[in-house]
Image (cartoon, rainbow, N blue to C red; front, side, top):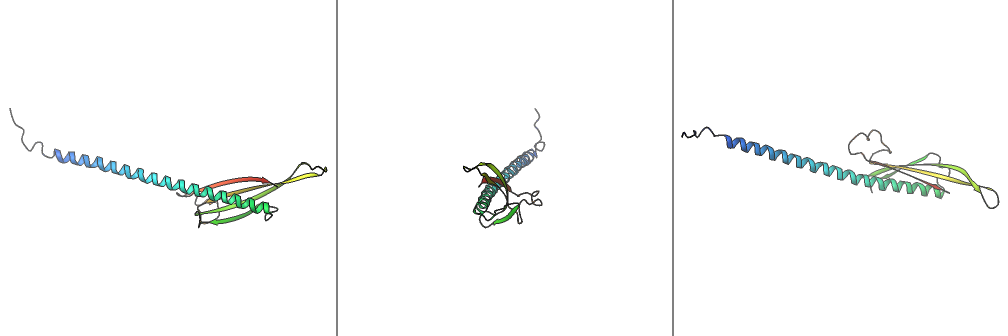
Length: 151
């Protein structure tokens, strides 16, 4: 029986070690990538919740202004609220109103009601919302809320 020459298997351990290192490096890169996507998704969720809270605050502010009489005509009135100190968001609030007849009063007179529609758009922009130039960039968040009330 002939013995193999000691040099014929030399270098096999180095190839196996390089293969193991490449597999481990690929695994580490995949874990880092997964961690980054999870962190980005979590940050987007938090910003979305802040934008929703800002939009809700905008609709409540708009209803207060409309119903207390500040926006009596409320036809296309618009106001931008700067909530960046609290939520990092700006809110553009728009109000429209419509007068319509709703039956009669007990005296027979026509009863009229005013329907207020308050629309609030909140976003993490430096200008009014919605911001079409920032909407195509990563990290832009926008939430819209609309409410109606009669008086």
